[in-house]
Image 1 (cartoon, helix red, strand yellow):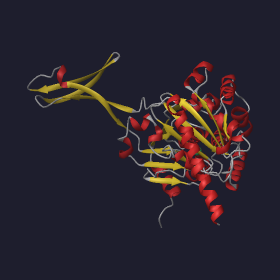
Image 2 (cartoon, rainbow, N blue to C red):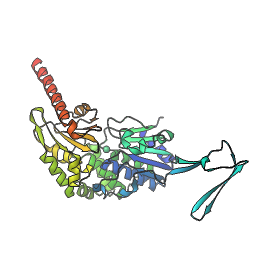
Image 3 (cartoon, rainbow, N blue to C red):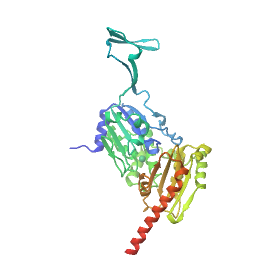
Image 4 (cartoon, protein in one colour):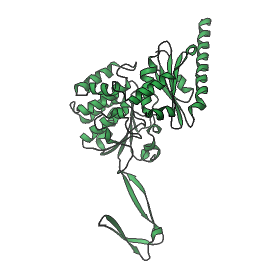
Length: 391
Ligand SMILES: [Mn+2]
């Protein structure tokens, strides 16, 4: 009988010893909770694990168990290769010996002489036997770990574990469950199956997994919250997951810089009443003047704008480095914001979507973005009006 994707994931992880785990850049609670929980579980099972993310964890996640164990690069996990050109002179013997703090590599030539010009060095292979990619709809979203080392993704089996509807199934094994609230929710049963022990998940692993479920459901407030996610969360609390710690650190503690940034976003708030949306913007200068990091803007849309009454959706335009990011949240169950993100080459879910305009300043594209959305809204309204009159 053919194995299910979950069984295939378990089989691969059981059979491999050196495992690389990656998650998307700008990690959120689900990305971090998932990568920390899976790496701790695999280490507990005696595996050698390297967990890598393009960016460090935002300060709000400092309370997560072993959050410092996620590194930003592959340092220490790559061979260093010394190459000798043997096209003119052949090597007869190679020895090495430790000479104080130096390792001497001694090459005996066969009739001739080697010189400096014959030597070169380069970065060599990794020794990973499997790669697990968590919470990432595609490989590009991993950032530099993928961009700088695309070859390793062809050399070893890639396991793709995710819950995004747009996941492009890039893995050799794809465990993509779009009905799951979060990658962490999927991992609970993977870790149980992997360990074969219903008591394997300890307090720290449970806290990390619960963080993923709580942040991706916005503390069980989002419409994606399912009965299963509540059952799994209850199970994690029973395993010792520190739910109160998570709520306190993520939802009830705000750095002053975050509050100031939110103030800036609120004072820029505009209402496009006839087109049914509110929007605001944050420029690079807003972040630098306040001393806030780019990750501090996430609450602006999820905690402030999404609560706007009397509109269909909210938009936040953020200038990050050289790009303009748009985050969209539906405030009305019937409004599909993914259709709006698509106008700018983005995507997402009905309730939450995003787009990115590369290499532009906010001032260059702001007017165009807003008028494009307004025109789209007006065209939708015309279609609805026509349908109403014709029916
Ligand atoms: Mn997620």
